[in-house]
Length: 259
Image (cartoon, rainbow, N blue to C red):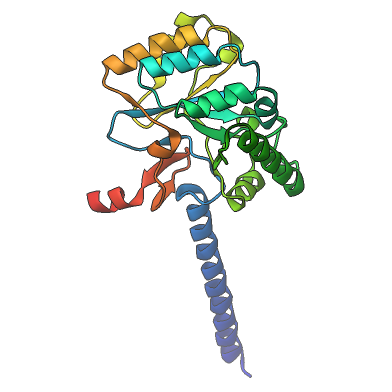
């Protein structure tokens, strides 16, 4: 084989390798885009893209239950359908409060069983936390949760994947009241109202000192602005959706119609 022919064969081999590499690169690019930009199982829902003035008020229950009657009364006054993310141990300790939340028509999700940092703890432990939590909640109020919020909002790909395998939608938030830091009611209300928008998911906690007072201000103002307070399941899209890199859920059907 002369030098010219050897060069041609070398170029053919190089082109073949480059072509194969390009195919792999594009495939990986599509996978990453789907997993991150289009809402593969690795991202929880932080908020929802919508033109409607709807928000979801959520309450994490991992501390005391003394303020539950006040919160339920407040939600009834402002026609709020809230979502409570309840620790399994909390449901076990406070079954009457868990039942009262359910009987008031609010949605109940899991907040794990013992409130560990669930990022990197292993699939077996994740399953145990979710299964035990569901058992305690169902025993207390007859509801099997299908929503999940990670303790402290800490998650990794494995946690989101395992939760999805077990039938859970993982929900985060885009508006944090930071009530666990015990700001004044006025500070809390100002912080929340400056950040909220259509499709927002608001985070509060039971057992936080100034939360009921702050919530009264927030709900009053948002009601005046024409907002409706809905459960997470009534805010999120159940099918044909993507989740962008910021965790915002987008309806593919609406996006296609608009485009």
